[in-house]
Length: 454
Image (tube, rainbow, N blue to C red; front, top):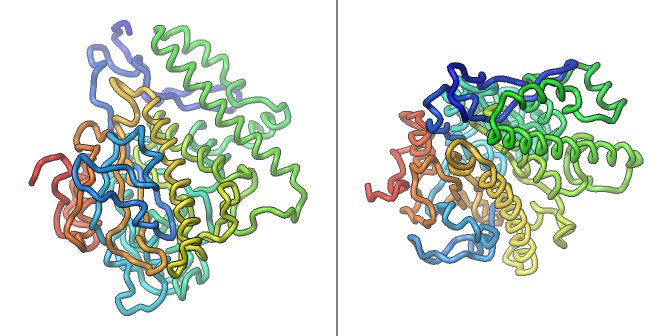
């Protein structure tokens, strides 16, 4: 890239006819003589419901010599980019005198470390989630402080689990004690936020695109051409690859929307989950689409903090594509039946396969002097370990990414039983440059993540 006195604004957009498209980081957006500046760290939290078959998750060996277990096999090519952690507990997910409701408490306490008030009314009470603690600081330099995504919803009112409000079961992120941030389930709505000007497109633009069966990119083509002419070859390649990926995401949404319109009302389909119109028929397609938009959110600098719920806690989704027509939550209460355990393991492996695809997407996306994966730190896990027993200890926890070389990956670490999960979150906030005194029942920062003994 040639040296110039001026750099493109990081918030430069392509505009035209009421539409707008955010851009990825280009060398031309950096001031002259600062082309190698450190890229910002992106944080992500990916949640899977109903626990995991831990005997097929946890490696037998600690340290760097751990072997891939059956559930972790999809991470084979990414082994040096993951950090497995055993022994952590989220104690405030337990009953503590409140009786049944472990699924609601698992989701509500997972990122907050807070014991939610048992109520199905408006007097909900929870803590601030770790993602929102990070967003308060990291969001100062992005269009959106955070982005909340999901693949299954169920509303925020009413009783969803033994007297606990649906707000607990269906929300991972909490802005404040009484302010859950429900995940966005609609791919079109996410697309319009990310690739627009921060809001959904105006009605006329939406109607014009639909009526003419055109792409959003058609409406910003002139602006894109002008920008392309001002860039060097490397930036032009980045721009072209990015716009192609945006068009591919848009195409997949359009296909899903057309399929939804062609489906007769009351059709025989998956009625075990709540989802908006225009969602891909197959769960795998839906998940890949939302993961790709999560990657795009990082790539465009739209946000640095994202949460994604792969299912609501207590989910009864079925997975016919992998030969599991049974309801997920029902299977989780397997009572030791090997057939049910085997089916649950298949679900666990499918989830991790989709997550591994997301990590590969990050690894293949250039970002500064490395990749998006180099500059990301993603937490993957569940608020329960054994779903049959509703266990809130020895949780399945996996860190993935590069963390700007701040952590040492490629290891399996075991900690003393009952070590608070919130100790990990305190350490991750430090890594992200957002030091915090405490979260929930934290007792200090989790040691050894950097590879040091202290």
